[in-house]
Amino acid sequence: MISISSNTKIYVHTNPVDFRKGIDGFASVCKSELALDPFSGAMFVFTNRRRSALKILYYDGQGFWIYHKRLSRGKFKWWPAGKISTSIAAKDLAVLVWNGNPEESQMQSNWR
Image (cartoon, one colour):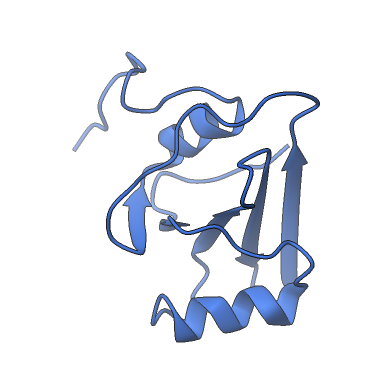
């Protein structure tokens, strides 16, 4: 179970990434391609070429976590297109992890 606050920054890398990479490889992608600091406490979401799996890189202040979800069949229905990265809300990540489309979900908007 991933526990994420609504203040957590979540970045989705829109291009597929080689999933043979480990923590150092994904951290390198954060620095070189996204120009973001992997030690910032943000979550970085990646997909493979077939879009059948997700990996999330997260630094918790003591060390890195990699969360990996692979679908037993099919591929993730939604993935952002366009620029190399996009930011999404925690509620959108929850929908994405369960193979939903955050743009079509009817969740309540964030309270301010």
